[in-house]
Image (cartoon, rainbow, N blue to C red; front, side, top):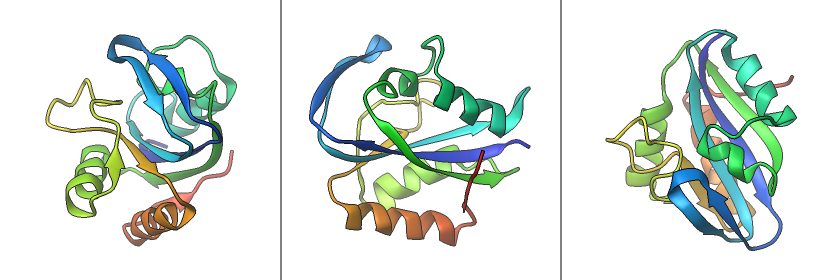
Length: 139
């Protein structure tokens, strides 16, 4: 199965993390949502499993997984909504974001990592992604 995904992370304390070529980024306490897609060998389940198991640091999100806890994963099978979701939520719904994160391969995108200080902000995002067809993913 291929498609788009959103990984919801919890960061319990403020920290500075070196994120590959982006350098050191300060991450506040709160919640983050990483938006991605997988349309290659192995599919969504393989990509998501890799995030839980760790491994060589390749994507920006790999650098923050040692510091944050994955609390939920959403998927939208067979749809390539990575850029749509990132740009709609940043520009249309006005969520906060980490500039340049996770989108070095998509120059038209601002970011693929959203930030929510409070649970109610995260819940607003969850409602939005469910409304366009994303479902909770279970490994």
